Image (cartoon, rainbow, N blue to C red; front, top):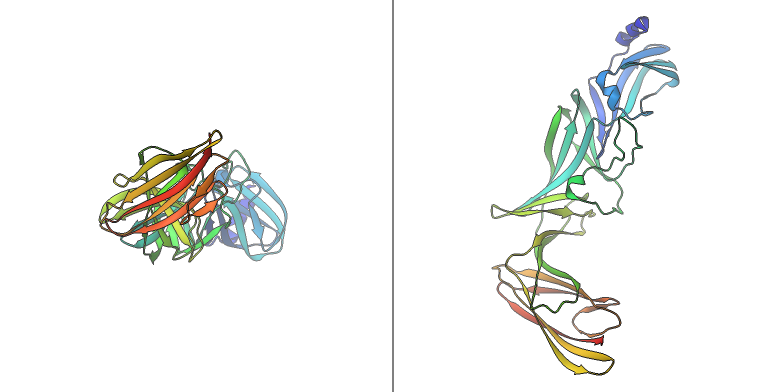
Length: 332
């Protein structure tokens, strides 16, 4: 083995690599120049963070690999330029967003353990790419948003973002790499089962057209220098409407009044009034969606009727108040 280590000097590892970062690992490709027949790769501590079976030489026909400590002996047919490729769990990445004064910024958060990596080409992929469980690897690669809770399945697969070349240093690096101007529409929402309380809580949120493809991730919203909260932004193709919800609104409320119109042995009919007073000096859009116990009958001409209830979207001017009325018939 000591004699074979001399072959290492004949295979010059390039300083710059192609790096593709996934949520739970990275694919690294290092250009090498191989001597004829055999070459020793001194992987060092990186070897313990490589996914088993992922280390390979591209560009030659491999005959065998022998692992001894942190060194790997490759035997192959061929010589000259080739590529050393491996999956590395010591480098992970995720995306997040900031929305401030109409500017949506997409950030990359890269976490590196071990020695620095010089990436002449750096790509970030957001989404799910499974990696089988191994002692030195995570159970699954989808870890980008674990801190924000469960992530709904995305029908859009992997989102690919090209980042500027850079030297990746140990620790956490955050880089803004895409910006787009948006015109956020302020939203208030109630969705849930039919309720008869006098006051119904509302959620506040934003809706805007995606200026570029949006991978699922956390968003931080700031308006007028005031931090409004963090929320989950779902996957959204470019040009489609994205919605983000920031939790309970502290000022707006729905006022509800329910009165009995008629009653028989089998059913009762009610008049339901729902009133919203926009407390803000800017327009808002109200989104209402209610479900009812079955069977039911609903007379609500201005709403879109659904098998389980209705949905309605309503624009309100600054300080405007609107009252919505419908007739609801339920079994007794």
